[in-house]
Length: 365
Ligand SMILES: [Zn+2]
Image (cartoon, rainbow, N blue to C red; front, side, top):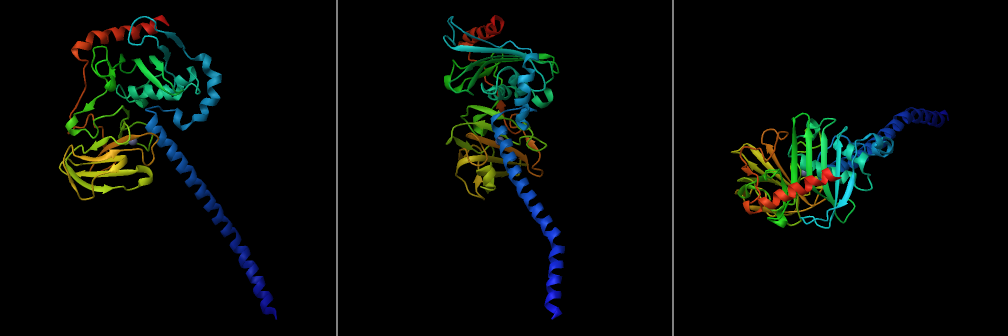
């Protein structure tokens, strides 16, 4: 008769002994689920930033810091915000042009957000500035407190839509002033940013080798951001969905559509002779199959907005074949031919007028 009691008793003890163990397991489980959710969210956040904001070392990771700091520190920034209407004849006739000039403090985003509010789109404006700046320097390494920036821009319909017309950045580290002027008279659909002499700031890959021939702008270069230690691993070309995508080199398709949650529709091509692989992510349509031989310039896909991306773009990546952590910048990669455009001769005078006009905006304001 003792047996059942003893058995119950034993069970009780066993339960008692198991309890902390199970409890611990449940806690661990909750923590891991929580961590996963957090990482997922955080990861997506980071990627959105990668695609949308070009380079900045402070803002994207700690957006709440601004909300606290902006009202407290606005007064200490060196500010000359101004808005006026260019009424004289010129390419910007009748449009409201804004200008800002300020000294960098902490980071581009941080500084811009101390001058114009988040509601007015400071993050978007500094993203635009950052995208242009990538052609001058690695912002994370090259910016110094006290560097002087002047920007002339136009606010377009949306609250976060800007068009930078002029950017001038006086760098302590490089001991020079970088300048960029927007000009599109020679080709309104394919305008660009040029230095004072009329040489384009951004580079282009020659058409025969370019993964994409029509794009709005480069939004990110390899090394941008903190996506892992090495930063962003590819080059992002902002473009409409459905834009033809071509292979940058001859090779063989090794993979398609892997890790689609992050990459969306995607292609990997092996180029053993060059010791590299090329990757094409966020596509809307894949037109090749695994094992297929591809020649340079062959259309392989259509661009899209699939996977972890916030806006339609092509992510193009050149990896070292034997160590995929080594990423090449397509514009400096030895097997890619790149070039910069120049203002066509017949437009040079008009371009110089534009330079003068935008430069006067800063002085007058
Ligand atoms: Zn990318």
